[in-house]
Image (cartoon, rainbow, N blue to C red; front, side, top):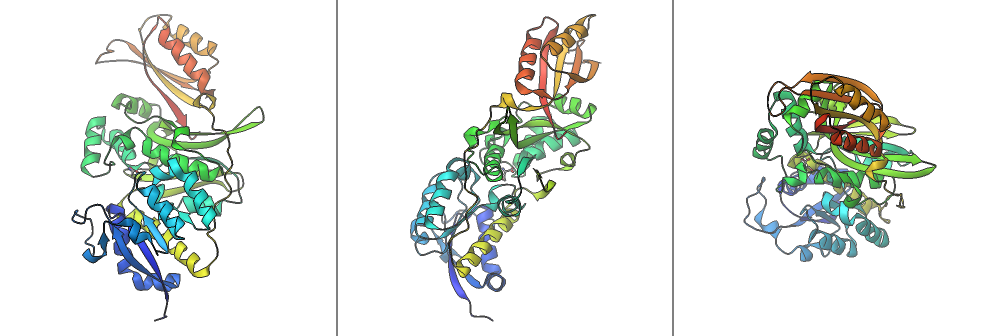
Length: 436
Ligand code: HSE
Protein backbone atom coordinates (compact mmCIF):
# COMPACT_ATOMS: atom_id res chain seq x y z
CA UNK A 1 0.00 0.00 0.00
CA UNK A 2 1.20 3.54 -0.79
CA UNK A 3 2.76 5.38 2.11
CA UNK A 4 0.45 8.35 2.49
CA UNK A 5 0.84 11.57 4.34
CA UNK A 6 -1.51 11.79 7.36
CA UNK A 7 -4.10 14.53 7.81
CA UNK A 8 -5.57 15.07 11.24
CA UNK A 9 -9.38 15.28 11.25
CA UNK A 10 -11.38 16.61 14.22
CA UNK A 11 -15.08 15.87 14.45
CA UNK A 12 -17.30 18.12 16.54
CA UNK A 13 -20.63 16.42 17.30
CA UNK A 14 -21.71 12.79 17.22
CA UNK A 15 -25.44 13.01 16.60
CA UNK A 16 -27.24 11.17 13.83
CA UNK A 17 -24.96 12.60 11.10
CA UNK A 18 -21.76 12.93 13.16
CA UNK A 19 -21.76 9.33 14.35
CA UNK A 20 -22.19 8.11 10.75
CA UNK A 21 -19.33 10.35 9.57
CA UNK A 22 -17.07 8.97 12.32
CA UNK A 23 -17.97 5.46 11.31
CA UNK A 24 -17.27 6.09 7.62
CA UNK A 25 -13.91 7.72 8.39
CA UNK A 26 -12.90 4.67 10.45
CA UNK A 27 -14.39 1.95 8.25
CA UNK A 28 -13.24 3.34 4.92
CA UNK A 29 -9.84 4.64 6.04
CA UNK A 30 -7.83 2.67 3.43
CA UNK A 31 -10.17 3.49 0.55
CA UNK A 32 -10.21 7.19 1.53
CA UNK A 33 -6.41 7.23 1.68
CA UNK A 34 -6.21 5.83 -1.84
CA UNK A 35 -8.80 8.31 -3.06
CA UNK A 36 -7.40 11.45 -1.48
CA UNK A 37 -3.71 10.66 -1.31
CA UNK A 38 -3.72 11.20 2.46
CA UNK A 39 -4.58 9.09 5.47
CA UNK A 40 -7.48 10.78 7.22
CA UNK A 41 -6.78 10.18 10.86
CA UNK A 42 -9.83 10.77 13.06
CA UNK A 43 -8.04 12.47 15.94
CA UNK A 44 -11.07 12.76 18.19
CA UNK A 45 -14.78 13.41 18.46
CA UNK A 46 -15.94 16.29 20.65
CA UNK A 47 -19.27 15.61 22.35
CA UNK A 48 -21.29 17.25 25.11
CA UNK A 49 -22.01 14.00 26.96
CA UNK A 50 -19.53 11.10 26.82
CA UNK A 51 -22.24 8.62 27.79
CA UNK A 52 -25.08 9.73 25.50
CA UNK A 53 -26.61 6.93 23.39
CA UNK A 54 -25.46 7.07 19.73
CA UNK A 55 -26.77 5.70 16.42
CA UNK A 56 -23.41 4.00 15.83
CA UNK A 57 -21.03 2.63 18.46
CA UNK A 58 -17.87 4.75 18.49
CA UNK A 59 -14.47 4.00 20.07
CA UNK A 60 -14.66 5.45 23.54
CA UNK A 61 -11.03 6.64 23.46
CA UNK A 62 -11.85 9.04 20.61
CA UNK A 63 -14.53 10.89 22.59
CA UNK A 64 -13.66 14.13 24.36
CA UNK A 65 -15.58 17.05 25.82
CA UNK A 66 -12.77 19.51 24.99
CA UNK A 67 -13.45 20.72 21.43
CA UNK A 68 -10.91 23.56 21.54
CA UNK A 69 -8.06 21.21 22.45
CA UNK A 70 -9.08 18.82 19.66
CA UNK A 71 -9.12 21.63 17.08
CA UNK A 72 -5.52 22.68 17.77
CA UNK A 73 -3.24 21.06 15.18
CA UNK A 74 -6.09 19.64 13.08
CA UNK A 75 -6.01 19.92 9.28
CA UNK A 76 -9.74 19.44 8.78
CA UNK A 77 -12.45 20.25 11.32
CA UNK A 78 -15.92 18.80 10.74
CA UNK A 79 -18.55 20.75 12.65
CA UNK A 80 -21.79 18.84 13.20
CA UNK A 81 -22.92 20.26 16.52
CA UNK A 82 -25.63 22.48 15.05
CA UNK A 83 -26.88 25.75 16.53
CA UNK A 84 -25.08 29.07 16.66
CA UNK A 85 -22.85 28.86 19.73
CA UNK A 86 -20.48 27.32 20.52
CA UNK A 87 -20.35 26.10 16.87
CA UNK A 88 -19.47 29.59 15.56
CA UNK A 89 -16.61 30.03 18.03
CA UNK A 90 -15.17 26.58 17.25
CA UNK A 91 -15.35 27.20 13.49
CA UNK A 92 -13.55 30.53 13.90
CA UNK A 93 -10.94 28.81 16.11
CA UNK A 94 -10.46 26.13 13.46
CA UNK A 95 -10.03 28.67 10.64
CA UNK A 96 -7.72 30.73 12.84
CA UNK A 97 -5.51 27.70 13.33
CA UNK A 98 -5.32 27.10 9.55
CA UNK A 99 -7.74 24.16 9.32
CA UNK A 100 -10.28 23.69 6.56
CA UNK A 101 -13.83 23.48 7.87
CA UNK A 102 -16.62 21.18 6.75
CA UNK A 103 -20.01 21.91 8.28
CA UNK A 104 -23.67 21.01 7.89
CA UNK A 105 -24.79 23.88 10.08
CA UNK A 106 -27.55 25.65 8.14
CA UNK A 107 -28.68 27.79 11.09
CA UNK A 108 -25.16 29.16 11.55
CA UNK A 109 -24.51 29.80 7.85
CA UNK A 110 -27.89 31.52 7.41
CA UNK A 111 -27.07 33.95 10.21
CA UNK A 112 -23.26 34.27 10.39
CA UNK A 113 -22.27 32.97 6.94
CA UNK A 114 -20.78 36.27 5.77
CA UNK A 115 -18.52 36.52 8.84
CA UNK A 116 -17.31 32.93 8.49
CA UNK A 117 -16.58 33.20 4.76
CA UNK A 118 -14.72 36.48 5.30
CA UNK A 119 -12.48 34.89 7.93
CA UNK A 120 -11.89 31.84 5.68
CA UNK A 121 -10.86 34.17 2.81
CA UNK A 122 -8.51 36.11 5.09
CA UNK A 123 -6.68 32.99 6.25
CA UNK A 124 -6.85 31.18 2.90
CA UNK A 125 -8.80 28.21 4.27
CA UNK A 126 -11.95 26.64 2.88
CA UNK A 127 -15.42 26.26 4.39
CA UNK A 128 -17.56 23.59 2.73
CA UNK A 129 -21.22 22.98 3.52
CA UNK A 130 -22.80 20.59 1.02
CA UNK A 131 -24.71 18.92 3.87
CA UNK A 132 -26.36 22.17 5.01
CA UNK A 133 -28.97 22.12 2.23
CA UNK A 134 -31.03 19.16 1.03
CA UNK A 135 -29.07 16.40 2.84
CA UNK A 136 -27.42 14.01 0.41
CA UNK A 137 -28.33 15.97 -2.74
CA UNK A 138 -25.37 17.72 -4.38
CA UNK A 139 -26.71 21.27 -4.76
CA UNK A 140 -24.08 23.53 -3.17
CA UNK A 141 -21.22 22.37 -5.37
CA UNK A 142 -23.27 22.69 -8.61
CA UNK A 143 -24.16 26.26 -7.66
CA UNK A 144 -20.68 27.13 -6.45
CA UNK A 145 -18.68 25.47 -9.23
CA UNK A 146 -20.64 23.90 -12.09
CA UNK A 147 -22.92 26.91 -12.65
CA UNK A 148 -20.40 29.60 -11.67
CA UNK A 149 -20.01 30.62 -15.31
CA UNK A 150 -23.74 30.79 -15.95
CA UNK A 151 -26.37 33.20 -14.60
CA UNK A 152 -28.88 31.59 -12.24
CA UNK A 153 -32.27 33.26 -12.50
CA UNK A 154 -34.43 31.16 -10.21
CA UNK A 155 -34.26 28.33 -7.72
CA UNK A 156 -37.33 26.73 -6.33
CA UNK A 157 -37.99 23.49 -4.62
CA UNK A 158 -38.73 21.36 -1.61
CA UNK A 159 -35.91 21.65 0.89
CA UNK A 160 -37.61 20.41 4.05
CA UNK A 161 -38.32 16.70 4.23
CA UNK A 162 -40.51 16.56 7.33
CA UNK A 163 -43.07 19.09 6.11
CA UNK A 164 -43.08 17.36 2.73
CA UNK A 165 -43.85 14.11 4.55
CA UNK A 166 -46.72 15.77 6.45
CA UNK A 167 -48.26 17.41 3.36
CA UNK A 168 -47.78 14.23 1.33
CA UNK A 169 -49.63 12.08 3.90
CA UNK A 170 -52.44 14.66 4.00
CA UNK A 171 -52.67 14.61 0.22
CA UNK A 172 -52.24 10.91 -0.49
CA UNK A 173 -53.85 9.35 2.59
CA UNK A 174 -56.32 12.06 3.58
CA UNK A 175 -54.77 12.46 7.04
CA UNK A 176 -55.58 15.51 9.17
CA UNK A 177 -52.63 17.84 9.76
CA UNK A 178 -52.15 16.90 13.44
CA UNK A 179 -52.27 13.17 12.69
CA UNK A 180 -49.67 13.51 9.88
CA UNK A 181 -47.49 15.59 12.20
CA UNK A 182 -47.75 13.02 14.99
CA UNK A 183 -46.54 10.27 12.65
CA UNK A 184 -43.71 12.46 11.32
CA UNK A 185 -42.59 13.05 14.92
CA UNK A 186 -42.78 9.31 15.70
CA UNK A 187 -40.61 8.56 12.68
CA UNK A 188 -38.03 11.07 13.92
CA UNK A 189 -38.45 13.30 10.87
CA UNK A 190 -38.98 16.53 12.82
CA UNK A 191 -36.22 18.64 14.33
CA UNK A 192 -35.92 18.55 18.15
CA UNK A 193 -37.85 21.83 18.03
CA UNK A 194 -40.62 20.97 15.50
CA UNK A 195 -41.46 24.64 14.95
CA UNK A 196 -38.18 24.91 12.98
CA UNK A 197 -39.72 22.61 10.38
CA UNK A 198 -43.43 23.40 10.65
CA UNK A 199 -43.06 27.18 10.70
CA UNK A 200 -40.60 27.13 7.80
CA UNK A 201 -37.44 28.28 9.64
CA UNK A 202 -35.42 25.28 8.45
CA UNK A 203 -36.46 25.86 4.82
CA UNK A 204 -35.80 29.61 5.19
CA UNK A 205 -32.26 28.95 6.42
CA UNK A 206 -31.64 26.76 3.38
CA UNK A 207 -33.21 29.34 1.05
CA UNK A 208 -30.88 32.03 2.45
CA UNK A 209 -27.85 29.79 1.78
CA UNK A 210 -28.99 28.92 -1.76
CA UNK A 211 -29.83 32.53 -2.68
CA UNK A 212 -26.49 33.84 -1.36
CA UNK A 213 -24.62 31.33 -3.46
CA UNK A 214 -26.74 31.53 -6.61
CA UNK A 215 -26.90 35.33 -6.76
CA UNK A 216 -23.37 36.00 -5.37
CA UNK A 217 -24.77 38.14 -2.59
CA UNK A 218 -25.38 38.10 1.15
CA UNK A 219 -28.78 36.86 2.22
CA UNK A 220 -29.51 36.10 5.86
CA UNK A 221 -32.55 34.37 7.31
CA UNK A 222 -33.94 37.80 8.25
CA UNK A 223 -34.23 38.62 4.54
CA UNK A 224 -36.39 35.56 3.83
CA UNK A 225 -40.17 35.93 3.72
CA UNK A 226 -41.40 32.90 5.66
CA UNK A 227 -44.76 31.20 6.08
CA UNK A 228 -45.03 27.68 7.51
CA UNK A 229 -47.55 24.89 6.98
CA UNK A 230 -49.44 25.49 10.26
CA UNK A 231 -52.43 26.98 8.42
CA UNK A 232 -52.70 24.20 5.80
CA UNK A 233 -55.91 22.23 6.38
CA UNK A 234 -57.40 19.08 4.86
CA UNK A 235 -59.95 21.35 3.10
CA UNK A 236 -57.15 23.32 1.42
CA UNK A 237 -55.54 20.10 0.24
CA UNK A 238 -58.90 18.89 -1.11
CA UNK A 239 -59.64 22.16 -2.96
CA UNK A 240 -56.15 22.03 -4.43
CA UNK A 241 -56.72 18.47 -5.61
CA UNK A 242 -60.01 19.36 -7.32
CA UNK A 243 -58.26 22.19 -9.17
CA UNK A 244 -55.42 19.85 -10.28
CA UNK A 245 -52.84 20.96 -7.71
CA UNK A 246 -50.91 19.63 -4.74
CA UNK A 247 -49.79 21.75 -1.76
CA UNK A 248 -46.00 21.80 -1.13
CA UNK A 249 -43.83 23.89 1.16
CA UNK A 250 -41.60 25.65 -1.36
CA UNK A 251 -38.46 27.70 -1.11
CA UNK A 252 -38.25 30.21 -3.97
CA UNK A 253 -35.21 32.38 -4.76
CA UNK A 254 -35.45 34.53 -7.88
CA UNK A 255 -34.07 37.57 -9.62
CA UNK A 256 -36.56 40.39 -10.15
CA UNK A 257 -36.30 43.27 -12.61
CA UNK A 258 -38.42 46.38 -12.15
CA UNK A 259 -37.79 49.70 -13.92
CA UNK A 260 -34.31 48.51 -14.82
CA UNK A 261 -33.52 47.88 -11.13
CA UNK A 262 -32.37 44.39 -10.18
CA UNK A 263 -33.36 42.80 -6.89
CA UNK A 264 -33.94 39.30 -5.59
CA UNK A 265 -36.82 37.67 -3.77
CA UNK A 266 -36.24 34.88 -1.27
CA UNK A 267 -39.32 33.27 0.23
CA UNK A 268 -40.73 30.12 1.81
CA UNK A 269 -44.42 29.30 1.87
CA UNK A 270 -46.94 26.55 1.21
CA UNK A 271 -47.88 26.86 -2.47
CA UNK A 272 -49.86 25.06 -5.12
CA UNK A 273 -48.01 23.06 -7.75
CA UNK A 274 -49.70 21.44 -10.72
CA UNK A 275 -50.07 17.69 -10.26
CA UNK A 276 -48.30 17.38 -13.62
CA UNK A 277 -45.19 19.20 -12.35
CA UNK A 278 -42.22 16.97 -11.36
CA UNK A 279 -42.24 18.51 -7.85
CA UNK A 280 -45.73 17.06 -7.32
CA UNK A 281 -44.24 13.57 -7.36
CA UNK A 282 -41.68 14.29 -4.64
CA UNK A 283 -43.10 12.11 -1.89
CA UNK A 284 -42.33 11.40 1.76
CA UNK A 285 -39.23 12.98 3.24
CA UNK A 286 -37.50 13.57 -0.09
CA UNK A 287 -36.26 16.93 -1.37
CA UNK A 288 -36.05 18.32 -4.89
CA UNK A 289 -34.58 21.58 -6.11
CA UNK A 290 -35.13 23.18 -9.52
CA UNK A 291 -32.43 25.55 -10.73
CA UNK A 292 -33.05 27.74 -13.77
CA UNK A 293 -30.04 29.37 -15.38
CA UNK A 294 -29.83 31.51 -18.51
CA UNK A 295 -27.58 29.18 -20.49
CA UNK A 296 -28.21 25.81 -18.81
CA UNK A 297 -32.00 26.08 -18.76
CA UNK A 298 -33.89 24.10 -16.11
CA UNK A 299 -32.07 21.54 -13.95
CA UNK A 300 -33.57 19.33 -11.27
CA UNK A 301 -31.77 17.87 -8.25
CA UNK A 302 -33.61 15.16 -6.36
CA UNK A 303 -32.99 12.76 -3.48
CA UNK A 304 -32.83 12.25 0.27
CA UNK A 305 -33.02 15.59 2.04
CA UNK A 306 -32.25 14.28 5.51
CA UNK A 307 -31.10 11.17 7.37
CA UNK A 308 -27.87 10.40 9.22
CA UNK A 309 -26.09 8.20 6.69
CA UNK A 310 -27.42 10.11 3.65
CA UNK A 311 -26.26 13.47 4.99
CA UNK A 312 -22.94 11.89 6.01
CA UNK A 313 -22.35 11.23 2.30
CA UNK A 314 -22.40 14.99 1.61
CA UNK A 315 -20.01 15.60 4.52
CA UNK A 316 -17.60 12.95 3.27
CA UNK A 317 -17.50 14.53 -0.21
CA UNK A 318 -16.47 17.83 1.37
CA UNK A 319 -13.88 16.08 3.56
CA UNK A 320 -12.30 14.40 0.53
CA UNK A 321 -12.15 17.76 -1.31
CA UNK A 322 -10.58 19.46 1.71
CA UNK A 323 -8.03 16.65 2.01
CA UNK A 324 -7.11 16.94 -1.67
CA UNK A 325 -6.63 20.69 -1.23
CA UNK A 326 -4.29 20.09 1.69
CA UNK A 327 -2.28 17.67 -0.37
CA UNK A 328 -2.15 19.98 -3.39
CA UNK A 329 -1.30 23.01 -1.20
CA UNK A 330 -2.29 26.61 -1.88
CA UNK A 331 -5.11 28.63 -0.43
CA UNK A 332 -8.71 27.45 -0.21
CA UNK A 333 -10.72 28.23 -3.33
CA UNK A 334 -13.35 30.61 -2.04
CA UNK A 335 -16.65 31.42 -3.67
CA UNK A 336 -17.32 34.29 -6.06
CA UNK A 337 -17.03 37.61 -4.24
CA UNK A 338 -20.35 38.44 -2.64
CA UNK A 339 -21.98 41.80 -3.36
CA UNK A 340 -25.22 43.12 -1.96
CA UNK A 341 -28.14 42.75 -4.33
CA UNK A 342 -31.21 44.30 -2.64
CA UNK A 343 -33.83 41.86 -1.35
CA UNK A 344 -37.30 42.90 -2.49
CA UNK A 345 -40.28 42.87 -0.10
CA UNK A 346 -42.89 40.16 -0.74
CA UNK A 347 -45.32 42.74 -2.22
CA UNK A 348 -43.09 43.03 -5.30
CA UNK A 349 -43.32 39.41 -6.41
CA UNK A 350 -45.62 38.35 -9.19
CA UNK A 351 -47.24 34.94 -9.44
CA UNK A 352 -50.62 33.25 -9.79
CA UNK A 353 -52.96 32.74 -6.84
CA UNK A 354 -55.87 30.62 -5.68
CA UNK A 355 -58.39 32.39 -3.43
CA UNK A 356 -61.06 30.38 -1.58
CA UNK A 357 -64.08 32.34 -0.38
CA UNK A 358 -67.19 31.38 1.55
CA UNK A 359 -70.09 33.47 0.33
CA UNK A 360 -73.88 33.58 0.75
CA UNK A 361 -75.54 31.47 -1.97
CA UNK A 362 -77.60 34.39 -3.36
CA UNK A 363 -78.12 36.14 -6.68
CA UNK A 364 -75.64 38.95 -7.39
CA UNK A 365 -72.86 37.59 -5.18
CA UNK A 366 -70.73 36.40 -8.08
CA UNK A 367 -71.00 39.77 -9.84
CA UNK A 368 -69.89 41.60 -6.68
CA UNK A 369 -66.92 39.30 -6.17
CA UNK A 370 -65.93 39.61 -9.84
CA UNK A 371 -66.17 43.43 -9.63
CA UNK A 372 -63.97 43.64 -6.48
CA UNK A 373 -61.36 41.39 -8.09
CA UNK A 374 -61.43 43.34 -11.36
CA UNK A 375 -61.17 46.71 -9.58
CA UNK A 376 -58.13 45.36 -7.70
CA UNK A 377 -56.36 44.92 -11.03
CA UNK A 378 -56.41 41.13 -10.72
CA UNK A 379 -57.60 38.96 -13.59
CA UNK A 380 -59.62 35.76 -13.03
CA UNK A 381 -58.38 32.66 -14.89
CA UNK A 382 -60.72 30.04 -13.39
CA UNK A 383 -63.72 29.96 -11.08
CA UNK A 384 -65.41 27.04 -9.36
CA UNK A 385 -68.52 27.25 -7.20
CA UNK A 386 -69.63 24.45 -4.88
CA UNK A 387 -72.08 24.23 -2.01
CA UNK A 388 -70.58 23.59 1.43
CA UNK A 389 -72.40 20.50 2.67
CA UNK A 390 -71.37 20.33 6.31
CA UNK A 391 -69.42 22.03 9.09
CA UNK A 392 -69.33 25.68 10.06
CA UNK A 393 -70.09 27.06 6.59
CA UNK A 394 -72.83 24.52 5.72
CA UNK A 395 -75.32 25.92 3.20
CA UNK A 396 -72.96 28.65 2.00
CA UNK A 397 -71.29 28.61 -1.40
CA UNK A 398 -67.55 28.14 -1.75
CA UNK A 399 -65.92 30.09 -4.55
CA UNK A 400 -62.47 29.00 -5.66
CA UNK A 401 -60.90 31.71 -7.81
CA UNK A 402 -57.73 30.99 -9.78
CA UNK A 403 -56.03 34.20 -10.93
CA UNK A 404 -53.70 35.06 -13.77
CA UNK A 405 -50.30 36.40 -12.75
CA UNK A 406 -50.68 39.36 -10.42
CA UNK A 407 -48.46 41.48 -8.20
CA UNK A 408 -48.60 40.29 -4.58
CA UNK A 409 -49.42 43.82 -3.43
CA UNK A 410 -52.44 44.06 -5.76
CA UNK A 411 -53.55 40.60 -4.73
CA UNK A 412 -53.37 41.26 -1.00
CA UNK A 413 -55.22 44.59 -1.40
CA UNK A 414 -57.90 42.75 -3.36
CA UNK A 415 -58.19 40.02 -0.73
CA UNK A 416 -58.56 42.68 1.97
CA UNK A 417 -61.38 44.34 0.00
CA UNK A 418 -63.05 40.95 -0.53
CA UNK A 419 -62.87 40.27 3.21
CA UNK A 420 -64.54 43.63 3.87
CA UNK A 421 -67.24 43.06 1.25
CA UNK A 422 -70.81 42.38 2.49
CA UNK A 423 -71.18 39.30 0.28
CA UNK A 424 -68.08 37.48 1.54
CA UNK A 425 -68.59 35.53 4.78
CA UNK A 426 -65.01 34.34 5.05
CA UNK A 427 -61.74 34.28 3.10
CA UNK A 428 -60.96 30.60 3.70
CA UNK A 429 -57.47 30.60 2.15
CA UNK A 430 -55.13 32.32 -0.27
CA UNK A 431 -52.34 30.26 -1.80
CA UNK A 432 -49.74 31.17 -4.39
CA UNK A 433 -49.39 28.96 -7.46
CA UNK A 434 -45.78 28.23 -8.43
CA UNK A 435 -44.05 26.42 -11.24
CA UNK A 436 -46.20 27.82 -14.09
N1 HSE B 1 -35.55 18.91 9.54
C1 HSE B 1 -34.90 18.86 8.27
C2 HSE B 1 -35.90 18.36 7.24
C3 HSE B 1 -33.71 17.95 8.33
O1 HSE B 1 -36.99 17.93 7.60
O2 HSE B 1 -35.63 18.44 6.06
C4 HSE B 1 -32.73 18.12 7.21
O3 HSE B 1 -32.21 19.40 7.14
